[in-house]
Image (cartoon, rainbow, N blue to C red; front, side, top):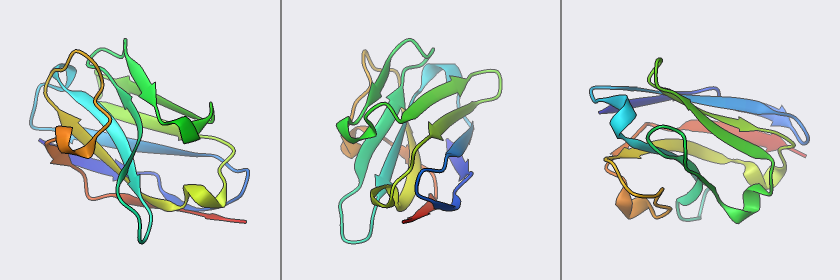
Length: 124
């Protein structure tokens, strides 16, 4: 499975961004997809994830209703819509995938494939 993220950039506090992650090499509708992020000096942390058909979604507490994860299985793509960004959201954002699971795991060890990451920088 190959994952390619896009959509990162430099924005100001309060702005929005939409990240995309395109997958190839697997039956997309059979895999769980999630977003993680990693800021300098910090561990990689779960942001949001979505089940195989989009019926299950999970968010980290810090999202606080600002982010929305979605997927389009016809395009083999997941999205992360991020609104009201703040400086603490500055990080490299990664998408990750794993095989079918009854829920959406939130630990990085549960995921097998990773994208190369896309930088999100929020200036205050």
